[in-house]
Image (cartoon, rainbow, N blue to C red; front, side, top):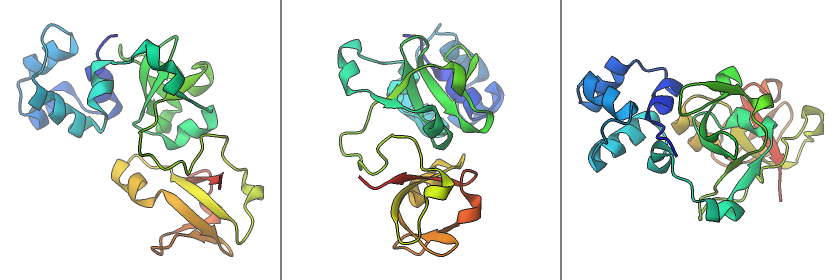
Length: 198
């Protein structure tokens, strides 16, 4: 599989010179990594992973075809809440989700719209909360006061998404979690999506 260094950088809207500066390497060195003329050492691979907010496996384009049974299908409606996350396609390989443009970024820098991507998959983490079972998100009129829902925030900020995702209770005009975090019902589909409790 081709490496995804360039795709990860482009998803983060970084120019080669800016990314090289933040990685503390020269621009020709980063260009050589992206062109697969050279390979970064482990420390630099980890720096790229941190800077681009992706896994090192994604950067290396790794996928084990013998483990396809561990891949979980992702409905296209759910892709909107997965900004910056890697997904797998039999046809296109590993891609990064770019929610803002409703597209997936391939390793060669080309983009594919969610609707043209076909079947895409994620590989769940072994300790992941099964909270949002990757079924289609609820329609807004299905949100009923008192209902407990799993919430996936829509944001480019990975830390914010991680902090705010989880179980919420629907109140009158808003949803709220145990920590007091709230989303207004009016922002449904723009700032967050909801999934039913298993």
